[in-house]
Length: 366
Image (tube, rainbow, N blue to C red; front, side, top):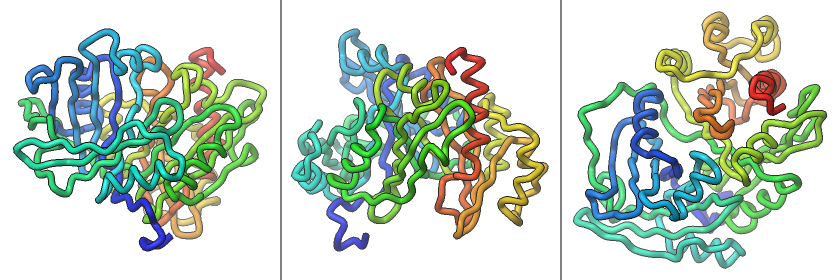
């Protein structure tokens, strides 16, 4: 899709906002474990009476952690019902009013009519639409804003800082939706946002002896936004998507994939900081080069860290998945390095899903 046809130009992911039980502790965890840097803060000291937000950044990735100061707010109810989880996937646009008008005219349900917020650093325009579950997309227009994050936030510069871990940008975000709902949301992104389908995987591609799921990947006009949408498929036991839906309570963002330019360094550092990753059998590495061909990395180094490899027509990729980062088996992260490949690691699905099933057995949820 060229820019003339793209009625919803998106520059990239603006931020991802999590509603959490304790934003201060969540922020500390992401600083310490993932190497995010403090950026901005909003709370009682800035005039808010009902919530607190901490904004963290690493290269182009911005995460916002928000918790409620009162027991009956939308934020508090969301955290109680779903545990810590993604509420807002914010999209950086040049024109938030037009983005809202174009999407709602095509059937999207509004959650925020266009509004302007100002402070001494300028103004920003926001609007928003609803998507699967309780997830929303906020369109952020910030061309006339020069503050640390957005109006209402102040710079946050604590004494405690950590070294970053080499994470660069959000590569893609995966949504888990309910039974037979994948095509509904695929059509939503196509019809209301002008996205196109990049890839499709059925239960033959993504299955093991016990579980299966189906997935379609939607992308925007310039390819900077990629949203795989997963739904459960019939299997002998309960799949990871069903487990997510049971514990999150509704459709939602299952994982955020973050790109790095040196996955060996990034994953090595994350492991040192206590991040736990899924493991695949050593036997995976006995045959992987037969499947993917020559790669730049030493296979023993990948094996030591548990990093997976896959190839498509345009190159190869390296990827690894964390275990869930909280007590509910819901949100986790993918670390990915692309060396030309545009795909999502189809060749690794079986090994990955068998690894997830081992974790489900330990949790008693398979």
